Image 1 (cartoon, one colour):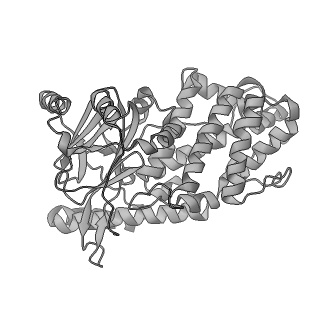
Image 2: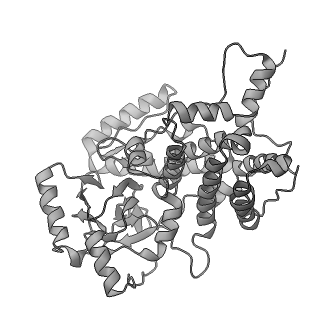
Length: 433
């Protein structure tokens, strides 16, 4: 790894005092030196004195970590364990306390409430101040655009239980998620390879248990079934909303059923009413949660949910044009922030530094992308609607996103350019008489 420049944040004494008194803190105990720790887009390589981050602006944040092992990759350099991460919603003057578990190699909540209270009080008395890195406010505006719909309720609704970490090793085998493009298949291979490396390392250190596990995996392979990794302590799957793919309504004529699946507004309305309690902002929060869990937590389950949410939303016509223009303006603003961040990350002298493991094939996934087909149909629909499109949707958010996609990806959204293209996964259901 290249040498890191010293970490510093430029703040006036007044601003630093304000944030120290009203901001939140993340206290991380017993984290080994050399561990990679991330908070939102910021990344730290843990030194001997590091105990967390202070001056956190109130609101949602994503904390991640990667254990390191030297010489594990055969080349003598550091070998990174899979990313572990969790969302937390920080209230003013609140303190989030986690302790490193050396066996599981991740950060876990402390179960003793009295101990947590003593440690949090110590942080508020500035007893740990010299060991806490200040949050870099220069990147906070970008983080707000990426997370402004993620409420405390969204985090509680979607996160693994009992303070669990998001990690690809806790998800279903990547191949069972059915990647449908070449880049998604390569991502599944990459994640499966990392999982296998982690299992091999555990097998080497726990010979007795590993022998039994290997025998069980061999039996599964011989029977033609893929081995399912055992659930690790402190990690789990997210509780994403189950999304409808196609409408099935009794009593409709074939023509009505075909139209219902070509314009999925009715599916969207039912989803928002039944699953989100009528609050469409929760759906936007889930979209942002899933995107960040994929981008920063390397979760393939999260990528699948982000993709499914966009497939549903961008397959609607009545909703953006008539019934939910405000929702679609917010949706396009959220997606614009996401794609703009992906296209800018790591480019140019002023670009934000990616995590040491890199963005997980994000650019390749975008170039491969289902997004081109989705947005081609969406923009073709907006053009056909003409003057009936809400000005805020058409002139502001839709146009800005289109410019980002055309400039950053080189995609051409000329009218009718891709009107005939369709992916089998989400092609309209045509019912013949």
